[in-house]
Amino acid sequence: MDIESLREYCLSKPLATEDSAFGPDWILFRVYNKIFACLDLNRPDRVVLKLEPDYGAELRERYEGIVGAWHWNKRYWFEVCFDTDVSDALVLQLVDHSLGEVLKKLPRKLQQDYAAQS
Image 1 (cartoon, helix red, strand yellow):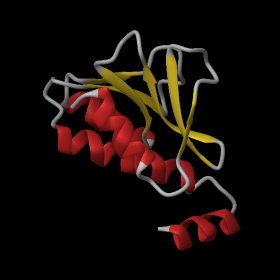
Image 2 (cartoon, one colour; image 1 turned 90 degrees about the vertical axis):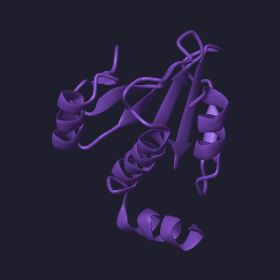
Image 3 (cartoon, one colour; image 1 turned 180 degrees about the vertical axis):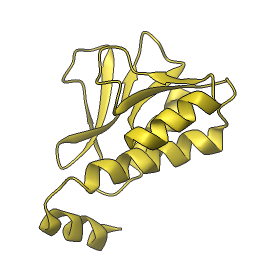
Image 4 (cartoon, helix red, strand yellow; image 1 turned 90 degrees about the horizontal axis):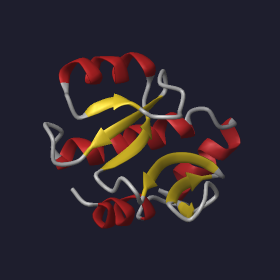
């Protein structure tokens, strides 16, 4: 996996946007202004994703390439490192999971609007 492929995948999601609200070295991917993925251009070998806490803890135990995200709430946010024991397919699956975690916290109307876009 590389950051350009990951960027393209994130932006392929309905209503996904990108910005650099944390500064020029960060790329944030959002739906409805809620972050679902973050790339640090100074550390292009990883992505920060939101995972359901129990699932994230299970993955951390199973994979060396999944750790608590630096400067993020480590209960919900995890760094997924590329070119480790985490396959590209799993990275993309975790992007989808992260997006789902963000969507399920939105009001029902927005969830329905999003589903209609898919």
